[in-house]
Image (cartoon, rainbow over all chains, first blue to last red; front, side, top):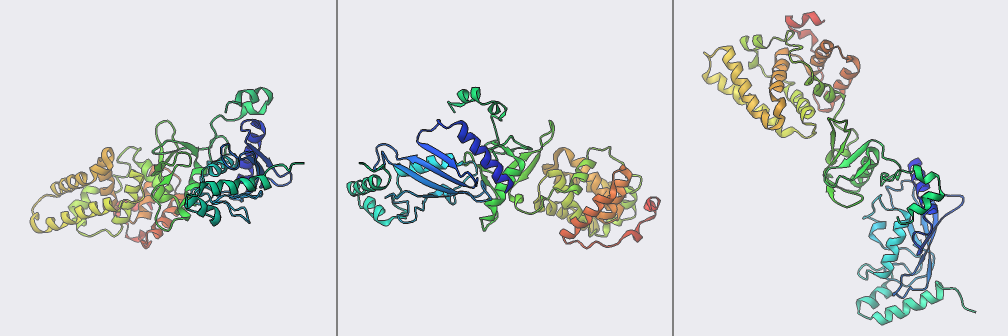
Length: 157
Length: 273
């Protein structure tokens, strides 16, 4: 408990200090609870998520960093490795490939990389995975782009 | 990283930050430890805790741990470097509750840094050979060997070495019975020493001679481990109660009954009572 608090405080200081270090990630800690964080990440360019801003919710366990944080998308996203309803993310480093050397910041980077490089063979969103697996890249991209526009972009007008 | 320099100007606290913190707690490294292959640096407690987490997720015995930074498989944690010595903590031992290298092991290892012969006036090795006491098997020898070799090799699993040496002792006794009735005790002793030295040297190297002497002293004492330690430490002037208490625990953990054997002290050791 103490160890996780101390470590999260270090990460908090680091985030404050390097706010402009990564313009694609904005990580904020809940004012009243250092175990709850929110991140805004920019959809990577040259993907159907380009131009969108996606919100992530972090729930950090007390055993952190020995246990990984729980992360999910709050913003709706059409991606094979993200559950369409719950926002749950299928990413090895958030499960058995977790290393305590990861930080919340680097987890955000890994999620951005996952957005650019989906793994259709371990899908949480079967529709999305099936499109990619059947080679229908255009179908996948247009669906993903539509949901990016619907959910991750400021409403026009 | 590029913005580091800029931010340092603005923030006074950042200048006191460790530039090379422990990757697990992100704080300055406490009790510096290294993984043996990739030599990445961690706090001792941090890397041990992480190894225990990894071990708890595996059904089989863990023999290596991936470095949290570079994923290299590592087999031990190097720690406690004091300029001349270090300790090595094998991954296969980490998840056991107690690290095997206890205070008693430390005491035995320290004995090898003292002058030899500190108890040789108490335990008469030559008389042991003259009176043919070596023909009686010593029920504590195996436990004593295990602990001694663990202490010297700083490894937990030394069963192979222990059995090797016990085997040499056994075959010495057998051959002794059949063919060497007329040899003098001194010849027998020399022969025994040579055999044990040959058997132990590949593992104990420079400490072999002293080990063979210590082994003979233990055999000549006729004592169990606890009593032998008490005599030894009294002679060294070291604090006995604490360690002898631990040695009792240690003996029970290797399932050797702790027999109150003090009444069989032979006359040579009366003076220490």
